Image (cartoon, rainbow, N blue to C red; front, side, top):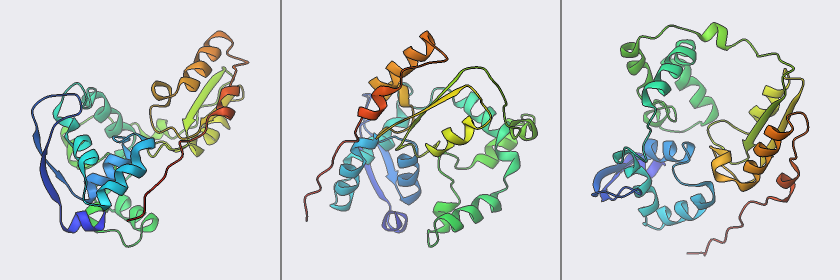
Length: 225
């Protein structure tokens, strides 16, 4: 990350969903955002990082180019920005984000910390978006006895798996399940999570989560240089 932030790579890469190659720049902040955003599937990250260290950035280049394809890129941009600008950004100034970043990642370049993962330039966007501040209501924990299913991936870099248990504390009839080795968007990626969800819809109070115990993260072998 530090090396890329000091000396970004520029190249032409074809979007993974097809289309003409586009010019992309891979710097340290872009690398962090790609990893947090699950742009490279969790199971492929070790090989992608190993390739990058050996001068083969193709996997990250393709992921970086994905935004050029409207089908692959973020298709709910307006909704995403409205939610972030009403529920998150008003409660955290730029200095708050930078200070938290320095505490969590001491020694990281300020140019990377200034672009909080998935939220670069968010404050500027929100000034234009101009939606109501709803942080006060969003920071009140939901308390409910309605049967609730909370599914998390243990490799999720956006909404960490530990958040599931914290959410369940105020949901008295909740079922919490973690799917090993899975990143963000758990259900589309995991057949086990799909079975758990189907079971929950059939029996909300007694979903079958047993398959989670049998899911093992893929093993990785990195060949020494």
